Image (cartoon, rainbow, N blue to C red; front, side):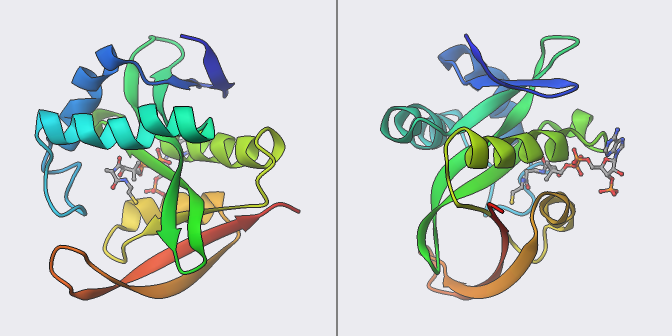
Length: 174
Ligand SMILES: CC(C)(COP(=O)(O)OP(=O)(O)OC[C@H]1O[C@@H](n2cnc3c(N)ncnc32)[C@H](O)[C@@H]1OP(=O)(O)O)[C@@H](O)C(=O)NCCC(=O)NCCS
């Protein structure tokens, strides 16, 4: 599978069907999913990557990619660009999910910065964002390192109709 992005310690490449086993453990894990509505079954994870990886590659040429530790070749998580609804409409959003053994090493920031630069310089996008819930402090720290500024907006959750705050971290091509 060809490498899309290389950083000092990581490779990002398209996700293959075989990666869904190692990526699935992230989405099935209560600690990794603590700021999501819940964990995902294998079939829910398959649906997630069908939309945000496989279909997105075909439609947009980008999506969630596999984050590979360049020294070991191990898939440690996903990071990439997907279209997500924001107050400005559907926008390219950088998302990141790592297996918890790899937290605390700067890998998510390294991958997300590379995705931001790829969005600007290879995809020619003028603006990329990250959407983070106010409770997800680790993700906010990553987003603060990647993006230039933050806005707050209200969003109505589809499942319950409840209104919640979301932080919108924004980078614009200079
Ligand atoms: C969000 C998530 C990827 C953040 O992981 P993380 O390990 O905290 O983030 P990074 O990989 O960028 O690592 C940053 C930390 O590593 C530390 N670090 C250690 N060595 C480092 C190095 N060589 N370079 C940079 N940072 C380093 C930093 O100091 C930082 O610690 P701090 O946040 O306490 O200041 C992780 O919590 C996760 O996968 N969560 C589950 C999925 C999720 O919620 N995703 C976000 C949805 S919005």
